Amino acid sequence: MIETMLHENPGQSENPDKKDADADNAEQVAGFCITVTQEGTRPLLVEVQALVDEAHAPNPRRLCVGLEQNRLAMLLAVLHRHAGVACFDQDVFVNAVGGVRITEPAVDLAVLLSIVSSLKNKLHEKKFKIIIENYNRSRILSEIYAAVSN
Picture 1: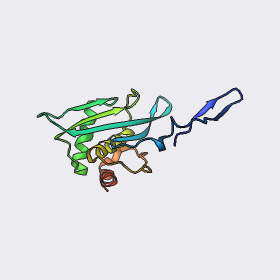
Picture 2: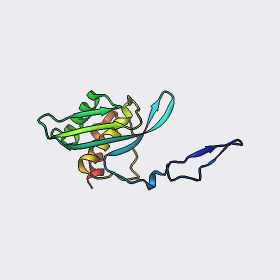
Picture 3: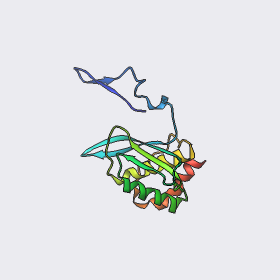
Picture 4: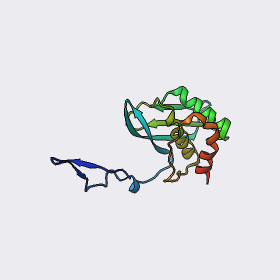
């Protein structure tokens, strides 16, 4: 749950109208993950969205907004090699919501989880937290696949 606060003269108070910011009541769809990244010195919650669909052209499309194109290609290759999840015949679209530019490697797991979630058309567990930096991704890719496949 995301808490919102009102800035008032004597200080801060809780926002009584929470319906806009209550993520627990939002409609959940496959292909997204909320993660923490750093913009300068500030931590920032970023929603990563992925859409994976069957390609209807000989060359599948790979489109990124807020993420480097070559990084997505590398992540898809790692996903195929170490988790056995093939996307070579799929169009893959990845978006970092809000126009945020993601350069931090710690967000790679959220991107991978979003892609697998969209490919399998299954939600990941609400309690599943992505806070591990992605230096040893080959060891935990099978865990991601298992979390979404069940």
